[in-house]
Length: 82
Image (cartoon, rainbow, N blue to C red; front, side):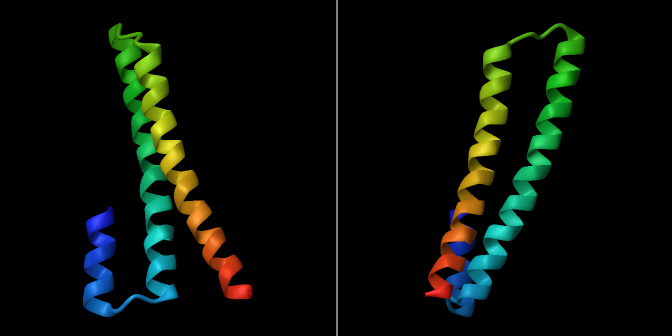
């Protein structure tokens, strides 16, 4: 994630559009991770793996990453309005 952002800013110049697009793409990517991890949890539970702590932690990390990128988008929009 971070290396992609650095490479993009180095190649194309750092601008609001690229920063916004990067964060928007990351929100979509981590949303798909939530779907994937949820399906994986269901499959593991069906097979007998009831490690609730690990499964909750896995989803929690995905949600935190989504929250961070949404927060970055909102902060950038707030800066732009000023």
